[in-house]
Image (cartoon, rainbow, N blue to C red):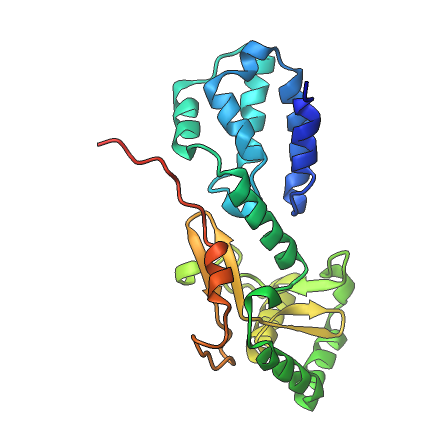
Length: 255
């Protein structure tokens, strides 16, 4: 007989992003429940979503599953509205869809979009030129002279600009502030990244924006950097892009 707990942990271990690490404890808690609790529709559905790559999550599955487990461990039945939320999530994507998405996430985590791009030479040429620009080096040296960059670097030495969301929505900290040293750094660094079309810096290495394809729960987003002269017929491997398009639910809303 298969050990479902071990099988689920093995499958979960293939998921990529750090956010997913909290799922291990939830898997253990789920399998520690009595079988009758594990068969509950809402809990089982939320649990199945724990084994889905983060790119396909429309809501915080870790939070939902944890909240449900808290209730079951306390002997409480989930409220109707919580069951309704989980039902709206629908069934988790198939293992095949999850496998394709997981592989894509591993590539994205390493900044690798080359499997989808035929015109990598455009990026390579622009990156080579950028490193040669004296004005770029002067701008970066000025920023390094103004700020202690160790405060803003991650463990891998990377500083990222603030994200720009779809339809030009901005993060909550986007409104201009100039009071603290961090306020000043964030505004200056964002402007620097805008000037040189970067998503960040890795120590002294510019992280030039790439032509990229990203999976979301609502569809596939293709990002074309503003320096890129896009040729739709030659620049992307469209068959590979289509294979990574967001999964389609087989469920249909009731009328």
